[in-house]
Image (cartoon, rainbow, N blue to C red; front, side, top):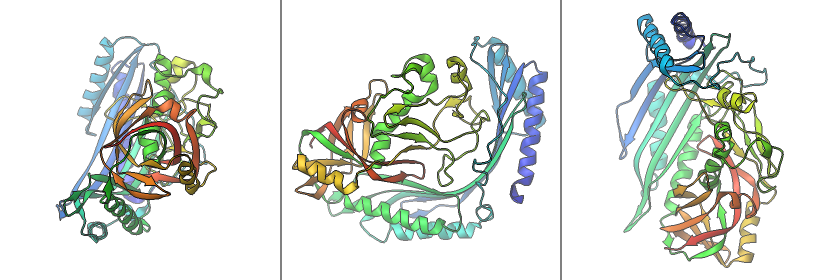
Length: 463
């Protein structure tokens, strides 16, 4: 671990050990400590004006205790012994009057495998001067404002360094350091009387050396997409083929699909599938969905989860076949299985279940062929980029406005459309109605990844 974090690591671990000791002495049968340290420096923009940089750092510790089958939790933002003792007492007190649940559990975890990512820290980012951070911010603004039709509403450029620690009374001790630069812009296009809707993007980098180039390229791409929305026209109503770009796939379809892959949902029997559905086809054979927490260039990268369980890349759906669910210790105990390393959360909350970095794998069709295939069936069609609406994860029904959508006719993009509604069903869209999957993928906001999908039987209501 880099020298700048040595003192912070020692202080965090010492405080966690004290909190663990206090929890056991206060009556807990077992206890788990989740601790973190964070240092962040942020430069904010508003209406193209710079605001003073803000900097904050601090420690946070949460303690989860078990007393029989009762659970208690408390947290504090201090390493002072008096506040740690108070948190331990409070957690035990809460456990004393909480309802019993046989699935509450704290377990010793395995060692992190050698092939897991071990170096999430770039010393150059930790030592980055505020002047360099200002220079990077100016670089972002300069690129974003080259085209005067783009109006910058707000933005940020943040440098963050953090430590994450999981410690429990059964011998688990996991700690990980991370550093990253992250930036974002929000704005709209204006030309004469034409105004686009607001759009937003965020990016992320763990390497100082490559960050300036990524800032320029991502800002340039974002502005280009916003300005393209200035050429507008009307769409037509139809039911048929629609092309979903990677952001739309993730926002509309995969976000709802992940609900049914949550082990707690499976345990409560409120999802679409159960353990008996594993190794059975549930969606189109063209669809493969993985969760990969070992991708260093993604914000969800981590070698262990909120309970200290080592993470691993895994297939959730492979060629349409259900392979696995996302489990924390609670869900795993309820289902008679083992945790898959999907406990999520931080020191201020109890563990929940979440994915790390979802990736829809590429298909076999070129992106160009998706457009050609659609054109053969329909004279005109919609291409969806973003979405504002409602999705019911239980039924799979979704309905909302396609933001910044493109209208294609006669083999070419004509313009962007506004106030166009789309609706459909998640399970049909990723099942019988999934026509084609592109062989190219895109990473969205330095996290999840998806190809472009061609989907049939989507209802389009033109505006």
